[in-house]
Length: 284
Figure 1 (cartoon, rainbow, N blue to C red):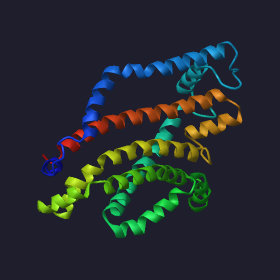
Figure 2: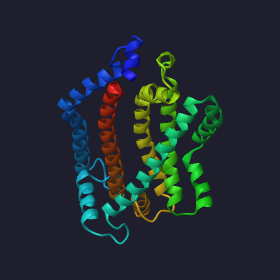
Figure 3: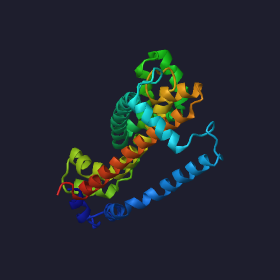
Figure 4: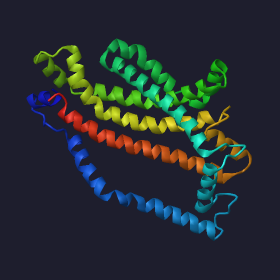
């Protein structure tokens, strides 16, 4: 239906972004290994500087030391930290709960605000005001309200995911060409059909961008939440290692955070390509 409306309005069947995404995906598959060159060179330089003493171990452990530390944390149970995989599972659970709830709530708020002026006047000022408040400023208040359990940490991650998703989805809804809506009304589409066949597919690229930004933002919020009053998780490991000046364990945790973000972003890129292809063929 979306492509039918585009065709009747004189617009091309496949939006340029969809075409570019298709071309880009084929090129990325054929040249994806090139993206490994700079990280490998960076790690090699890091190891060289560590081996020559330019980077002392007290300031930054070498890649070999960090790899050995990660292996030790995986195969043995530390009385202080537990195992790396157990801490990763705790952090992943907090992240998944906060991220999924944040994205869901953000989409609902964006749809209400984007489709209704009343909804925009009622909800958008509140969301924008909360977005301006630093997460570190909200965390002590959440602890006072909800204690030092899991809820404050989940709420911080939720807010970290909510704001980028809301802003991009709202902008995507409002950026849909009004002429397409007018043409849909001429074709006899109901309000729900206009939303389903025109507004939502038109807002999809911006919403997908919001998801990718929410993933990174929620990871940053997770780091903040886990370093305060936590007794498990990667953030707890970082805080404890800081007290004992164990920068090798800190680096292991930071690398795990980075890998989580990269894997999530890679998965979202795959979903994005398929979703844009669905957008092109939606309702045919």
